[in-house]
Length: 116
Image (cartoon, rainbow, N blue to C red; front, side, top):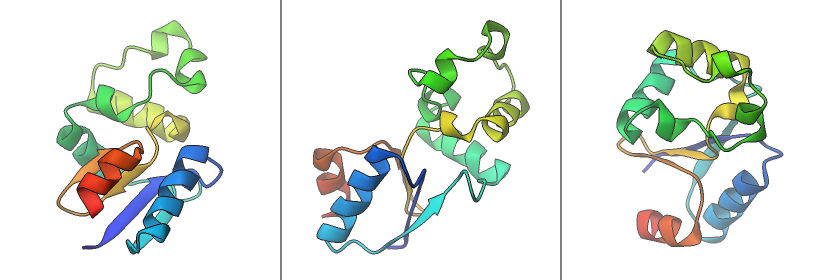
């Protein structure tokens, strides 16, 4: 399995996920999507795989809460993509992409079930 973990290098949840993967011998590559923006096609594929943009975007984040009200109602894929391009921290962290499955967030229980 080829696993790529996408997130922000300073994000504490991403750090925990990377430490868990290292401790359990799960080889992975980490991509900081602030430094290396994710291609729009990949973002769209993640959203579709997860069940919609609402599952990919962290609407509980300070970044989301600080958006003007008119920016919080994207109606099209292109509007979601423009919002994420402008505010990459809106994407839930971390995104674990193994090529055949995508997951967001980190919990030891979920990672144990998926990667052990």
